[in-house]
Image (cartoon, rainbow over all chains, first blue to last red; front, top):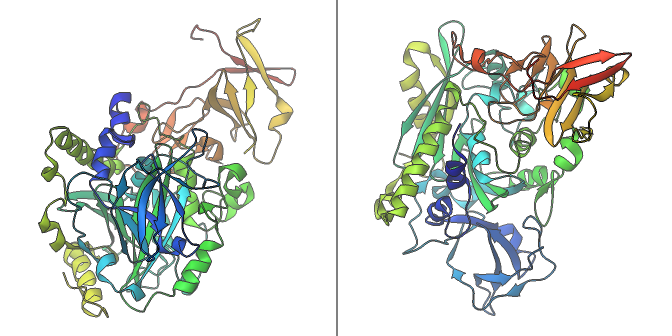
Length: 405
Length: 129
């Protein structure tokens, strides 16, 4: 557990706040390119600021401040957009289906050569969804490899061949074992965390029978993103972007290392679960996430359907709008959460001393960062490390776009 | 999830306050959210037929135990499988390393209960019973 003071430092993101100052030094997803299709203006609520994307006569977009009434809900689009000509305007950059904004001081940072940025548009699909809670608890569930064995447990396995575009539905590498079965049968992963130039590399080992080990490599990309495998073909790069202190959006880039992404299918799967224009999930706390006690007995661990996004949303929203970390009890399985908070504290100290260059990925060298490696492998227990590395290299060498690292 | 039963103890005449009828727990999933002076609890029946009234949020990361799994004679958090008995004592942390003794030190707040003529009362006095 941590003090209320430290919790506030780590979670609150308004202008001038500690974590808010750190987050502002990074490009932030502000909208989907899809949202621009409904025309100007597009309201944007980001880092506690009320903004809007507006198109000028030449058709190019600007991110400007807008005036908002004090009772305007941060999680809803306003009825009308009134531009505040005295407020700040921020640089934007469109990449792979997402409009990124920079709200920090100094020059805009470079984009690292992450796979989601290196892959061509045909191989990346972007989507987003609203979670009604603080951004840090949303991020922390993504760097917690143990929870998948419980929260996402399926009491029966689906046919992996029906799993396109869904998390954990593939077969584990080079086997016919559904990944859901491995997660269920081996709930006690051995987790190691390595600090890297982009954030944290998280390795979860599930030691299986017959001297085999399931290796799952995931990543925290500082300060608020994760990069994790979704299937043998695709990875997920996901930002947890604060709307204000008590709401956030997940923005995901699904990146394919094989075939072009079937964007129509991916979009249709996700639009079925969300209400526009805010991208609020149809299953939410107002309807108890469609919780069904009978389903919880027989089919899923949560009783909230097969969409694992809903399970995560339930877990993080029902902690409270900002998790009370003065009452938490972190265990060994929370090692990545602890390390990530340590990185954030270090960054907060650096910005408070005016030492912005000490933050991860703030110099020109960040443009050369590639990867990160992110995959599921099953390997002989005495050879898991090189087997995991080789599996990622194999995927990269046979990739249609330049994915070598 | 049902709205919690709201119990206001500020005007109480006794340290044992009525919270619900026993027959309320004769449901397929015998669990009710309870709020005592704004503090959140979960009331559940275990496999021995005994009732427990314990803190609603899992002491690990704060997940909501009202959506917990009623199994193994207690309630199990769906987030990481932490298991609690009716006294609020944590009995299992299935993702923690083999041999970990952390669970022994984890207990959620527990409100003592007693039943009289089919009515359930909770003890809200200051003294430890």
